[in-house]
Length: 270
Image (tube, rainbow, N blue to C red; front, side, top):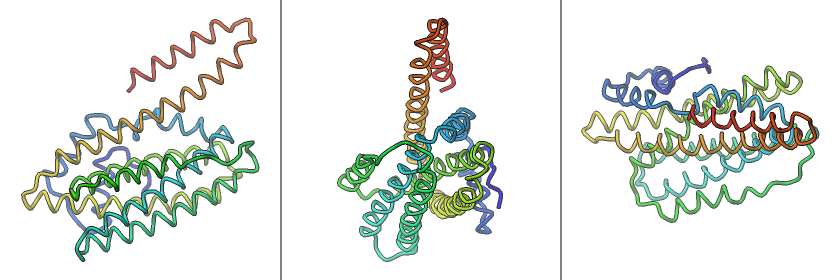
């Protein structure tokens, strides 16, 4: 299984090949347009941030804990949406997807616990992650195309996130890599399956005359904003630490200016 794909189009097309399917030209064109807009999870800055996170034991543990809670939240959302659907293959697929997310939640928690002895951090309050999904369920309007578009974008984002973590762990934490690599690759393979079935439905609906392209483009834009906000928050975390350490240095003013220049560079890349 090839985990190293560079673009959204390459990734989604490869998942179709996994299923023995061929995506329509219209759908591939829509993916190319999203790629051309510069979807951030595949951006080199995302990989650089992953290396920094993996190198920081506390942030590394907190990140995996948050991933675990996010997977649990997604499973609850999938269950809620499935409950609104008539008995169909899509409903069965969404319920199976929810089970995968619950399993992923436990896997991330185990990875965080395995790394926790190396980090000086207590329990995290990740209730806000669950609140986001609760609010979505409360306001869900029954638009299945919009929901499946969100699923595709979210799973693609997760795929690129995890791919960057695998690469960073292999290079920065070799003692931890053997266990983490196996677990993360299992999750990545599941994400590929989720991308495959959700993209398959969107392509099927497009072939049938439903224009799913606006919803899909909006979903990727929304996840793009969330991803850049996460990158920016993580970058600020390291910048604040850098400035704090530099405050006692004779070069403190220069260091402070340099960190702000880095922030500007990140913003321009966005």
